[in-house]
Length: 112
Length: 116
Picture 1 (tube, rainbow over the protein chains, first blue to last red):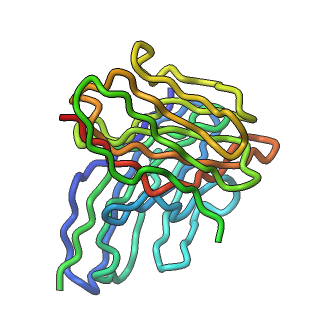
Picture 2 (picture 1 turned 180 degrees about the horizontal axis):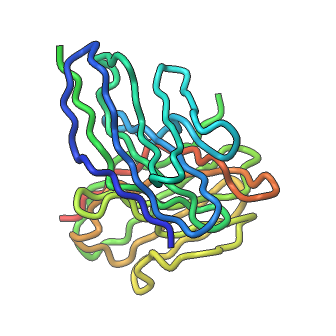
């Protein structure tokens, strides 16, 4: 069965600093991995996804994640964060044909 | 722009009352998901539908919860009777199968339910 572990429940950083949000997964089948972002009082939005091909995937707002099969990881990174990146970030793995298993989430807190 | 809509956005009710939450998926999407989000459990899948047929509702307490899709533009989640432990944010999401399953789920803004 697929599962997702997000090792940090909260990550505080200063503005313009780099950040890495960690995600490890377990899956016995082909892996499709996702990062979603949830801003306060909103629903989840897809940030980026890995389906196949290049192991490095990027989002339009500067985030990137690398699929590492040997380490069963899909960590999310950004070289320089903004205040507006403050949100909760969820890693997910596709389970079965369509459903997702989500991690517990990591709250990214960016301060000036 | 196309988005998933949910009503109501907030609901406060007393224990024992019936609660109905509604979701309008994105036009053309054939798969609808219901999730519940709490601090303790995180995001849990309650049920999902494809082409209006329920495929999996194993995450849903059967005795009090029910989910239906009366037509392609409306999905409902009903709790009867409601209990304080049902207090949570309920999300609807929709997606489109592309031959090999849903690759992207689009979430609605959620219904924040408080049962007193």
